[in-house]
Image 1 (tube, helix red, strand yellow):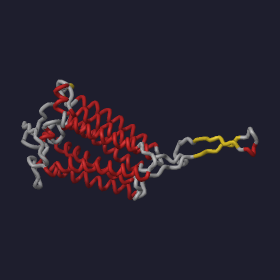
Image 2 (tube, helix red, strand yellow):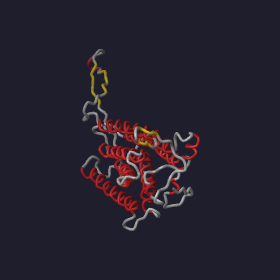
Image 3 (spheres, one colour):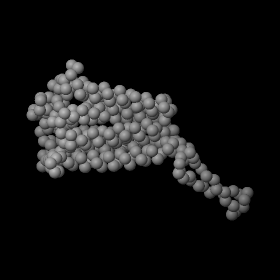
Image 4 (cartoon, helix red, strand yellow):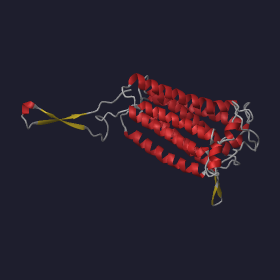
Length: 315
């Protein structure tokens, strides 16, 4: 297998020499591109499992994402609840697909592997597209939770997924004018668009907080989330080989990249939770704050209790 370590825009050679991306066995030469250093494998029965430490993080990510989805769903009247939960569902599917393609459960030599890899790449891009669209929800240009708001995200996500899947599978199978030696279109979709979606989302949320909210604490959530994402990519594509050498091949950058990605997603949830308040008057099972107000007309011992409900905090 070839190992080309120099960065070149429009090609995955450098990135595949750092960590084993799902597409690396399918591009470049017929044997793909192999990392210069990667984590040890373990054998379970007759199956060789790749990236075992990273798979543990993915299992944790599945659990944590399930918990976040549950908590989002319990905020019955929160702004953008139904829109943001779609992002977490997409992230969940992305993790499941990555689990199968990097673990060796779906072997690279199998005829189905290109389709799993293409689905994983398409899901990764679509998840970030969904996150970007959620960045516009807070501005209330469209009423959240309506059929138009939800279906605009769903249909556009299907289009993004289908287009990315088509480009991926066409690159792997060298059809429709694509080839696995020059894969600039797939590179732009996978890295270029993904980076643009994240950057625009972060800028939108900073604008939202600065212009419409009195509380500035959510800016910390955005900063931490963006920082975790950037550090994760540094672990993946900059210092992965050093991590691999220092850990004697027990770990590589993908392990720490998966941790940072999970933390970034958790900060997305923390940010959304911090800028939305549930209307407890109309929520199911919501508890109200009871205030005791002394009424002088009733005498010194007369107390009147009034139930005060939190109004929903609009963006």
